[in-house]
Image (tube, rainbow, N blue to C red; front, side, top):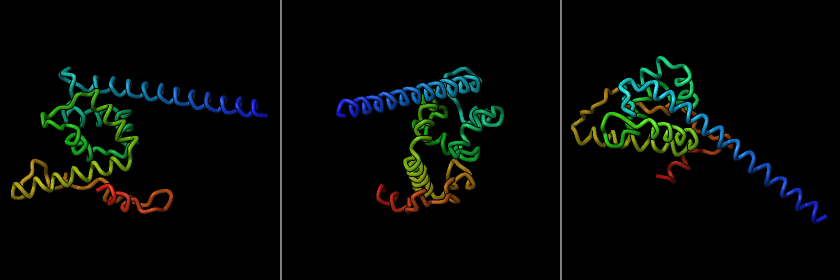
Amino acid sequence: VEKAQQAHENDQALVVKQRAKQKQQEHDKAQAELVRMCRAMDGDNSGCLTLEELLDGYDNDQYFANSLKAMVIDKEDLQMVFNILDKDGSGDIDYSEFVDQLHKLKTQDQHTLLIFILHHIKEIETLTKNGGKSRRAPQELRCPFADADLQSSTGSDDMGELAKLL
């Protein structure tokens, strides 16, 4: 009986390892495809993407647009996402880093919400310090989660969890 139980546990462990390996292969394939799309969007072949190149890619590459939409990133949100990822303010982002960060945005929902909120707080702080002047138009300062349903699938209030994080 013990040997049968051990064999069953070993089989389960093998299945888990195989699923993890398959998931990693799918992830690697998806990332390689996104990097390929970014290269195609990189009009000046700099190895980096500007906001304009991202917006153009969103308009002209349906797979890219759908990939972003699957992560609840609309065209209107691209400037904010770009600003978050362009930490040095250079006006461009390395597309390998962009793809890597997109994966993190996709897989870390509550973390994503927190990042967006923190970005908005920094934007408001900048507005306050600059006497209400921003490099972004007022309509761009909207929160992409303003209309979101903040109840989790378990029925708990995710805002309570967010408050704990803050």
